[in-house]
Length: 219
Image 1 (cartoon, helix red, strand yellow):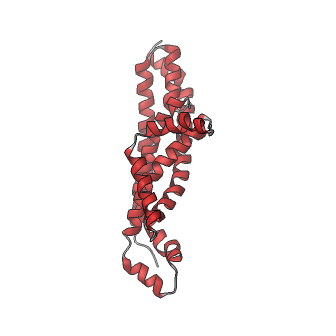
Image 2 (tube, one colour; image 1 turned 30 degrees about the vertical axis):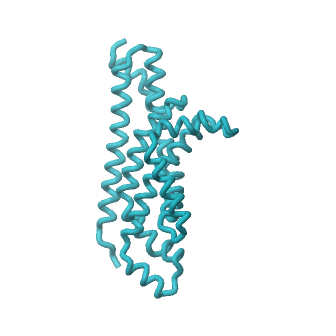
């Protein structure tokens, strides 16, 4: 089949896979961000055990391949009675992995807030938790936006790894078409182009957010 005709015929399948890729990335980002906030707060806690747990978690998740983590969740957990379908297993693995990276971004952003902010809050009678929630947290989140955006862009590409557990995202969709047509080059190139377009669009959104955050605040 002519490559152009093949790509036109395969486009609906590839776009369906691309939509699932976006869904995977967004779900993993939401769950990962929630976990990252908890891990970051543990990392700055005055409780040394919580700090140790946070550091070990980050070290393990950043020091082992994401593919291995996906295999552990999908193929390893059933051996202890926890069997997950491919989609939730993929989301869990991606969320757990990205949480480690985002927690370090959040922790660094929190520590980057001037100590005077903490002292001023304490002088107003706010507790540590209230200071984090109302004063330091919002400022830290603003500082962490570029790094969090980069994590989402990385997630878009990392979703390709869940194809190994039969999740029909973009790469898996391309592989299924390849299995039927025996024309890998144009389809892999098309899949790569779609990943690239998605990342470029997210980078554009990221720049818009960064410009808005850089604007002086009106009082």
